[in-house]
Length: 104
Image 1 (cartoon, rainbow, N blue to C red):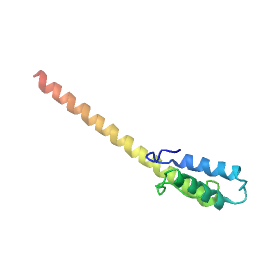
Image 2 (cartoon, helix red, strand yellow; image 1 turned 30 degrees about the vertical axis):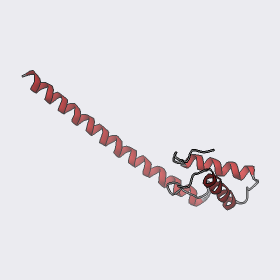
Image 3 (cartoon, rainbow, N blue to C red; image 1 turned 90 degrees about the horizontal axis):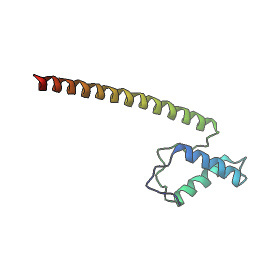
Image 4 (tube, rainbow, N blue to C red; image 1 turned 180 degrees about the horizontal axis):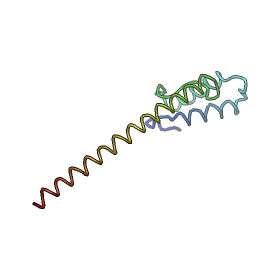
């Protein structure tokens, strides 16, 4: 069973949709594969799904949403890295200033 306290990743959701589509012979029915996958996760305690795209990963809309999601996450990662670097620089300056004061 799945741990419901762990946030479901888009990647795991997508893998499961594709596996269910293959397993249940739903090659021509993306909607049914999605429905089956969502039900499966909800039964296992994953009731919070609003943070992922609930579209088929191979559909036009699904590909578009995943590309947009990736772009947003990349932008956030850049912002976070810049923020961390600035904080580290400030901490280094503060430490150096403190050490200079201490040696006087």
